[in-house]
Length: 145
Image (cartoon, rainbow, N blue to C red; front, side, top):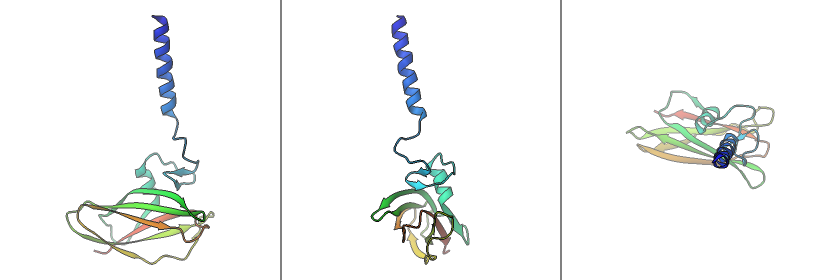
């Protein structure tokens, strides 16, 4: 009887210890494949807040997911999911700002890219960094309403 309780306690302790660690595949300074530096990112929502900016009028279209990977030539690839939960078609523009290791702009400012989002829809915008000097980014949204 005492042995059974000991086995149960050991299994429970192992499960708790296994769940307490972060995912083993994530490199330090990254979350969901995206660079975060020393920022604390505990969820996708935290990452989206860190990586998106809004210029001009506030828009109802929001980024809901941001994921990154490395493309050929050591270039940063970004996939961002934008959500329009409105019952109306919305017009928005977006661009990416590329940042180097020192926190300065790594490339010329991109042009605004227009996007028409239908009601209650999601759209994934994908881009690849223009240079391998770009190690970070910000997604900038601008309402066209």
